[in-house]
Amino acid sequence: MNLQLIGDLATAALVMRVFGGDVMALLRRAAAAGVRVGISELHQGHGEGKR
Image (tube, rainbow, N blue to C red; front, top):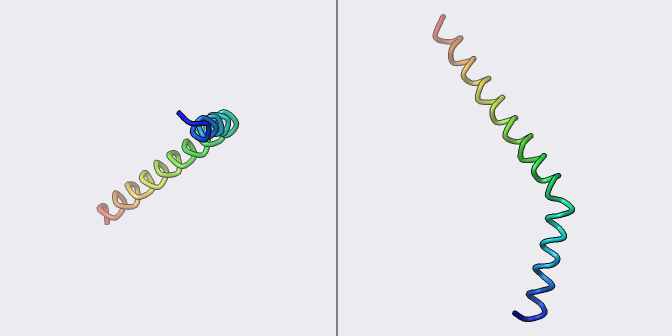
């Protein structure tokens, strides 16, 4: 391993340590929004079948 690769790995580890929690929170919010959209579409489709 050369010095540049070691520096890149250390930088990546530091970035993950600092921003890892924020990234996970954003992924959770995106997943929750996707679930809400899916449920909304299911309810709209279910209501159209009753008419």
